[in-house]
Amino acid sequence: MKNSFSRLLVAPLAVLVLGSVALAPLAEAAGNKGGGGGGGNARAGGGGGGAKPKAQVNNSKADVRTNNVRNTSVNNVNNNVNVSKNVNVNVDNNRGCCNNGWDNDYHPIATAAAVTATVAVTAAVVGSIVNAPPPGCVPVNYGGMIYQQCGTVWYMPQGPQYVVIAPPY
Amino acid sequence: MKMHEEARRAVASAVAAFGLCVAGAAPAQQPAPTSGAAQPAANPVAPASIQALKDMGAFLQTLNRFQVTTEVTGERVLADGQKLQHTAMASMDVARPNKLRVRMVSPRSERELIFDGKTVTLFTPALKYYSTVELVDTISGLIGRLQEKFNVEIPLSDLFVWGTPAAPIERIESAMNAGQDFVGEDLCDHYAFRQGNYDWQIWIQTGGKPLPRKIVITNRADEARPQSVSLIDWNVKPTFKDSIFAFTPPKGASKVEIVPAKTK
Image (cartoon, rainbow over all chains, first blue to last red; front, side, top):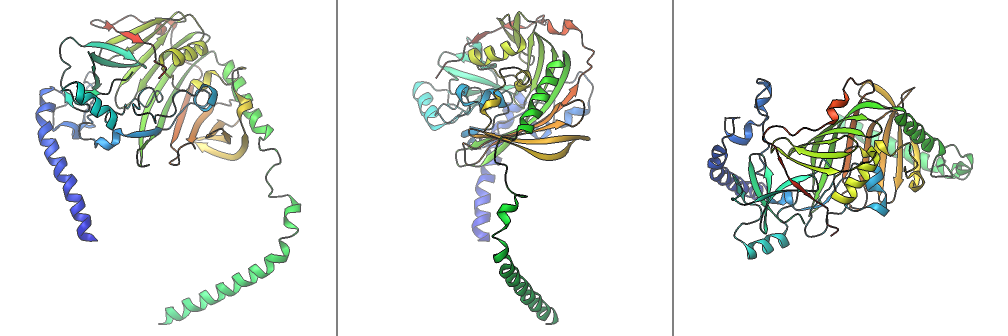
């Protein structure tokens, strides 16, 4: 029992360590003024001078499973609860996109269907992170969120970086 | 050893008491239902709870200028049913009938929405991108049209529906008073409702200012029952000026096309 548990734990830890080593240059390259060792420092910026930029969220270490969302809560009684006008409560479609409420702008980016589709068409893999979208991309506001559209590839801003997502529409 | 003995005695007497209880309860069970004291109400929609919603709505409609802030905790359900919580914050400056300024802060983004009755602007300060839409309407008209056409949701949009004929009170299938509770320092009346696949609860401040202070919505359509909890703070005597509802693009900001929501 104990043995299998520790073995279970070691594998993901190793992945995490490898992952953070690989990502470290990215975080530095982004020139985040927060300094320090990347994401772990997120809270430290709070006490400084008023003009200091706010700490940015860095989700690059989040497990891909966190993107595989089958449902979300809602926070709006009249629009969402009333079934006749209920357009967006179920995120169960394979795209899992679009507006799930003003607070919930996490867009599932790694659903199996989306990943295979995107890989087939282009080299930009859904879920991969870049410091800046390639030249020639066009910013688009969809569902109140800003994206960068580069032909068939879509980027979503995430902190100082951009992550490739399945097309939002 | 001694403790063992005591424990056994305790168990024995408990069993005996339980036996007595059961024996005693059996004959008493017959007349209990007719007494009616603990029976559920015949009408699942308690009229007084509906009235409390209406009173709150009427009071909200009397507020012409106010500031409201909310902190929401929501949940996402992953493919296997595991739930992840997330939080976000929003603040709104409101001047009825047609001026609104909203700041929405979530881990991923900070956004502003500015509406002067004629034009609505969505601004993302970190990226300095903004989108504008001509939209001559009231605040509630804005909310409906933004949702329908662009799939943009405004925090606490319920606040602008309660107290109007559009409030879908007839859809409530169950309404009950859940007693009183505190939200922060303030005493509130707590009500619970059911409609369709949703259960929701509201805490309305007790006394002369029946303001909604907390709203919990539970989605029963998913067996994991994702839930949102919104805490609400009010300033009903704000000092903002009307100039805050005008948007002037800051230096270096660029305009971005907003794409209407696709229906698929």
